[in-house]
View 1 (tube, one colour):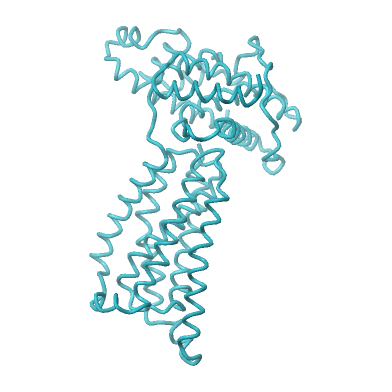
View 2 (view 1 turned 30 degrees about the horizontal axis):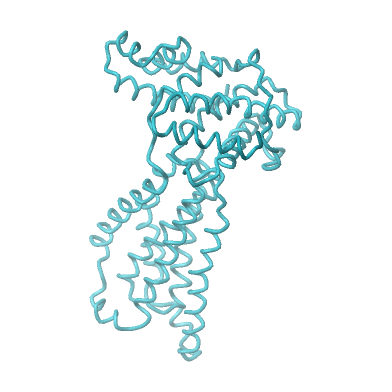
Amino acid sequence: MRTDDLISALAADHAVEPGPRGLVAAAIAVGVAVAAVLFVVALGVRPDAVAALGTPRFPLKFVLTLALAVTATRLLLALARPGADPRRAARWLALPTILVFVALVAELLAVPADAWSARLVGRNAAVCLVAIPSLAIAPVAALFVALRRTAPTAPARTGAVAGLAAGALAATLYAAHCPDDSPLFVATWYGLSVALVTVAGAALGVRLLRW
Amino acid sequence: MTADDRERQWADWMVAGLGGDEAAYRRLLTALAPALRGKVRRALARWGVPDADAEDIVQDALLAIHLKRHTWRREDAIGPWIEAIARYKLVDALRRRGRRGEVPIDGLGDFLPGDDDPAENLGRRDAERLVDRLGGTQGRIVRAVAVEGTSIRDTAQSLGMNEGAVRVALHRGLKTLSKLYRVEP
């Protein structure tokens, strides 16, 4: 087929798909809705949640996980567009990182040293490591369906950031169940769980995000 | 015409095309083909790859530019967007040739005009075979519109379908064709 013939066929095709922003927004809505159902059925909000909202540490968990979810999603949109420079969006990831460090320093100052390890180990680290990746499955799947319709030129990196965003969303849900509120616990176990989802996202990206 | 003027012209045609102006969109693709061809040939020459594959890569890139044009926003410069897609398709083609690791991912240089050579406007992989592999209605419609130059309306009439269904099948056919370019020859 001559290239001119191909151009004729392309010019005759007027179908334009929706832009990355709409696709990713829809994916997050669907992915979070499915994860929320799973959360309510399998875990549920912890009984003292309303009272805990009055403490500093419980609401802080949502600030940290949501800051990561929002900044990771911004970066994801930059990665979904060919030629877009992702560096500016990537720098915004410093925001949740700085917030975590500030929270860690504040916690170390507020809590006596002999209580640090108990806070870090917490009560249910194993549940956290299973729950966050499990809750992330639906958001990861929905984001990948959306991203396959975009044009990521760095499939592994894009998959990793999709995992990061999905992991942060899953961690936001899980935070409502988790009885451990110390930043020492959150940075360690939430961090490890989200890292697992990020690595899985990178591996999936290499396979699924080529176009 | 400077490179900036040229890219502004491309962006104008793209905006018109996204608004349904088929003539403007065809002008864009017709202008992009020689720019891509020059870029691909220079890159293949630099890496010592015979450029018999060049036109396949050009066609693959044009298909990608078309099928992914919803990822371009009118507030973005169109040059870097096209450049990124062309580079991705080029690296992908070379990777499939088993040249993994030998392909620099930047420094493909700017688009240069004047590389058009209509006589070599033919893909080595013979995209008609790819169209054959599309099969069924998709294949018939892509063949009719592309190779035979039939209009959507006439294609719809000769197949006894409505125009909307023909357009849907054409779009799906082009997506399938894009996948077939990426399969090993």
